[in-house]
Length: 291
Image (cartoon, rainbow, N blue to C red; front, side):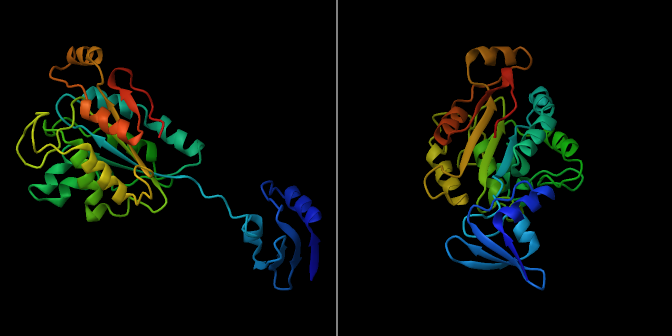
């Protein structure tokens, strides 16, 4: 057996290129005949570990390998007739968004749905609330082949969708679809980003009714309570946020109406964003989301 004093072993491993090894909680390490390592920790516990565990800091109680932050990011894309330029603008940031997530060492997933996914609950047709796919890819992560190109295409959901935009009901319908059940991960933060030039009018009936006084209009608590449950938040709002890339003032509405009339200020978007600590990003000055 070989007895390695901590300081000598640390120097050896650093010389081999293992710069991140921390031995603050280790007293000694003994290599056994079968190639494993008998580790004596400062709390007087002992562990028999492999070389891989040793090099990855998986030794002693206070030295687990740090877990990457986990984000499950859902984009809700308005695919109504006026949304072409806004989709194109967000799509142009696809590469920057992916590179930012990778640079920050985020364990991420990205999925896309539309503001008409709510229809799945009325027709009913579960396929309407399935995450959108491109080349067979619907939930993207760092291992997705050609992820930047796929992400760009998924943002471009077209302009043939319904003018009855119900973004809130749509993210709920998509997250509840059993075929999307592998998206929400235990321990991950959910980030919902809505791209729309209208407002949300999610209500209990199938008919079109873009009226803020509609008695069937769902209130914010309906959706925050759902998200608390879906994300297993130990405290209200802890594991998620809802953000909106939308119109938030008259000046922006006027600017957008010059291109295509009939836009709306996202009053309800602003309300849910404020309630969940999300981002408000103006369609008139579209910036990369901060996740």
